[in-house]
Image: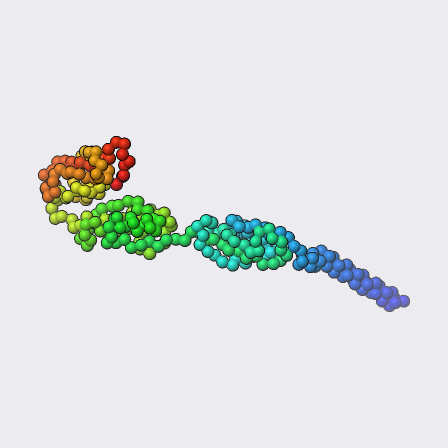
Length: 255
C-alpha cells in the first residue's frame, strides 16, 4: 500500500515538473524569442546622426537596435574632429532593425606642413606663408656670421612640423656680421622696428624719432639718421631717426 502511494506521488510530481517547465518555456518564448523574432522584420525610420559626435551617434543607433560600423575617417574643415559627416543608410529612410549602419567620421581640418624659410628674405617668406594660408606675425633681427644681411636665420616652427591653417609665424632675419667696433650702421630705408632692433643689438641709444610726412615711402621708413653710417657709437650721446609718415587723409600702410 505504501509502495503504491509513493508511486502515485512521484507520478504527480513528475507531471507538476513537466507543467512548470512548459509554462517557463512559454514565458521565455513569449517575452524574449517572439519580440526578437518580430523585430527581425520590424522597420523604423533611420535617425539623423550627422554632426553628432561619434559616441552620441553610436549610442543613439545601438539603442534602436542597429549595428554601428565606422566605415571611414576623412579630413573636413567644415566638421569638428570626431563628428559624423556621413551615414549610410541616410537619415529618415525606412530600414529594418538590426541592420548595419556605416558612419564616416571627420578628422578635422588637415594640418599644413611648415616650409623651410632659412636663407630666404622676409618678403619671400611673407609670400610663401601667404600662399599656404599662414601669417607672418613678427620679424626679429640678429647678427649672424653664417648668413648675409637680410637672410632668414630662424623660424618659430621647425621645417616639416604640422601646424594649423592661419597660424602666426615669427622669423629672425640676419643683420650680417657683428662689427668688431660699435659703429653706426646704415639704417636709411629700413623700417623703424628693424632699425630699433639693430641699434639694440649694438647697445646703442637713446633713440629720438622725428616724423616727416612723405607719400613716397611706406609709413615708418627711416629717411635720415644722425650720426651718419660709420660713426663711433661710443662718441654718440643720442641717435636721431627721421621717419616717414603718410600725409593726413591718405590711407596708411604700416610697415
